[in-house]
Amino acid sequence: MAENSRRWAEISRRYRTYIKLEKRLSANTVESYMRDLEQFAHFVLRMWDVPPRKVESQMIERYMAWLYDRGCEKSSQARALSGLKSFFNYLLLTDAIKSSPLEFIEMPKFSRRLPDVLSTAEIDRILAAIDRTTPKGVRDDAMLELLYSCGLRVSELISLRLCDLFFGEGYIRVIGKGDKQRLVPVSDTAREKIYAYLDCRKGGSSSEETLFLNNRGGRLSRVMIFTIIKQAVLRAGIDKQVSPHTFRHSFATHLLEGGASIRQVQEMLGHENIITTEIYTHLDNEHLRETVERHLPI
Image (cartoon, rainbow, N blue to C red):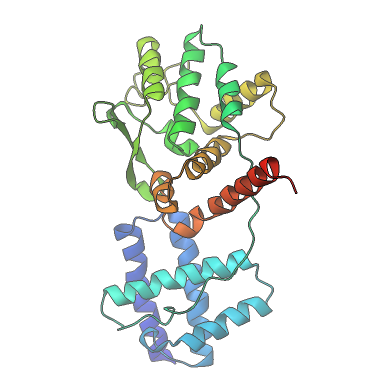
């Protein structure tokens, strides 16, 4: 058992380096994957005492059954299985194995809570509620327009820099989770609002490269964005729990309703795993059901 434990430890160290430096996963994701892998390795060593290259499908199925018996939520089971798929894909990439033992193992089925979604009319009402006669209002209007029309995370919005604007080419560069970059098309409306904001923007000594600045010329915080949205929603008279992520959910849903594919939405949102994006297919199906019931009452 000692020899196989050493093999698991060696490969795990190399795998950690791979997902951290090559895959550029976030620190939290790396730690989550490694905890799940360590637990799986202990299970395999205790039950069969084999190295990673000797793991078979039935061993993984036994492990998943063990997680179920322990009362693990289906979301936790899915996360564990996703991490194992990533690990064995790494072994395939490094020619340590010839085929993955997870090739025919499916993700556990589970329902997810559907996030709140704003209609396009509600988005318009929120934006219209912003007082654009002040420099702050011009800034807030540009921020919320970009937050929605590009489907940004709040962390991506506040970290945007002037050098990330490629308006001539029609896109912005977004630095997402794990410092991964993606190019997102920017609408004419968002571009015009950002130009209006730049005309009255006051740069700060330490944050002048940051696009959106606070009144003192420094970088905005996540709390400030939440507050701006809360105030605009209140003025618009919308009775929903709206956060920055609600704009992102709404963006993805409206893309699907407009005919975009799930892969296109995945790319626009910067999701590492398409499973994360697939929640929006449920939203789109719900929209379809409501449309049928509205126009074809039984």
